[in-house]
Length: 346
Image (tube, rainbow, N blue to C red; front, side, top):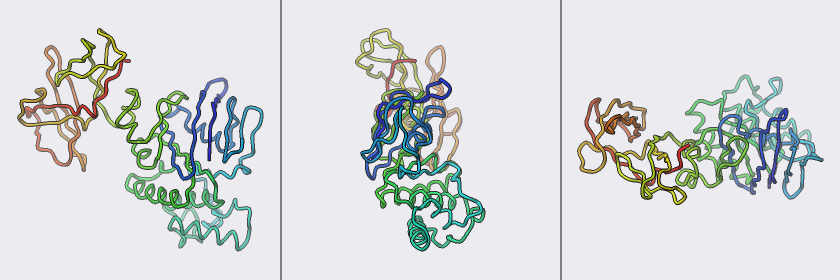
C-alpha cells in the first residue's frame, strides 16, 4: 500500500534521511523505531505529503505520489494522519471533529462518524467537546477522525506519547484491534521499543537517517545485528574483551567471536539484564556480591559486583518478582548465551 524507493531528504542542507527504501503492505503495522533526530517523523511527513523528497519516490496503492519533480497534495492521497498532539478542534464536538474532513456531508457523514466512533468504543461521547475528554478519549477521537475517510494507509506519530503507562497499555491494545479489524495499513513512529514490539508486524530501526535493521520483533530482539539495536530493545550490560583463538574470555565463561573477528581484536559482549542467572550456591559461573536489590513490581533489579583480579565488574540483573538476595550476599552468576551478543568494540 505504501512504498518508499531510495528516499533522501534534508533540512537547510543537513541530511535527515538518506537512501531509505521500505514498504507497508495491506493490513500490516510497520513501526519506525529509533532515537530522536534519526528521521522517523520526516518519513511520516513525506508519506503524508507535508514534505517533498529531494531524492527517490513514494508510491501509494500503486500510484506515484511524490518525487523531486512532483508531489500530489496531501488531501488527494487518501492517507490518514494521527498527530502526536491529536490536533482536535476545540470548538467542535467529537462527531464534528470526526466528520470534518469527509467528502460527504449531512446525514451520510454523521452516520459514518458514528460508525467509526463505535469502532473505537466512544460513540456515547459524540456530542462532547475535546476539553471534556480524558487523554485516552481524545486519542481515540483522533484515531476515529483518521479512520473516518477509510484511508488505505494511516500514519501514526507517537500516538501514545501523552498517556500514562497504564492507560497506554489499554489504548494501544484497542488501537491494534481496530487497525487489524479494518485491515488498514499503518506506519507508526515511536522511540519506545516495547511499544513497537507490541504493535508491529515489522520494525524498521533507524539511526542517523539510515536503516540499521529491519525485521519481525522477535528477530530484532533475538538476533540484533549491532550493539545499537541490542541496546534499543532492552537494558544491557557491556563486558569488554579481546579475541584469542576465536574466543573472548570473561569471568563467567568464554564466548565465540564473530567469524570476521581476528586475534587481538577488541570485542564487546552485550548481555541483557534478564540473561544473568543468580544462584546462592553453585559450582557454575562467577563469584559475585550483591550490592543492592530493588523491587520494581513484576521484577527485581539486582546490582552485582564481580571481582576481576585488579578491578571489579559492575553488572545489573533483572529477576522475576520479589528476590531474596540481601546486600552483601555472596552469589554465583552465569549467563544465558541466547541473550548475550558479541560485536566488535566501538
